[in-house]
Image 1: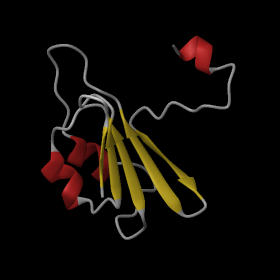
Image 2: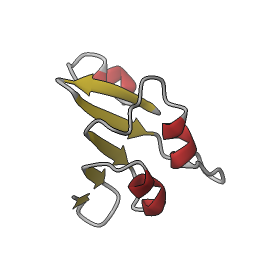
Image 3: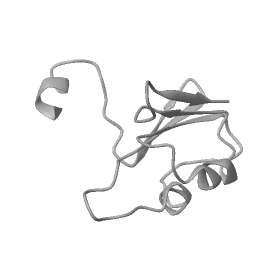
Length: 88
């Protein structure tokens, strides 16, 4: 997948954030098989993340919703949830 995307203008956000005109877009990798991730801790330690600025979270599955709410995202996108799910 990365090889294909490297030929496009698409950026994979792998436990990182991009600031687009003042909007923070946060992408968290889904954990590998038999591993887990605490998205709250990842976001807390993310370089440059400011919880006071508007942010969108991109996370594979609709889990750890409470951790996302603690960071006050204006929207979340969970593509794994049967047909994708947006939360506002």
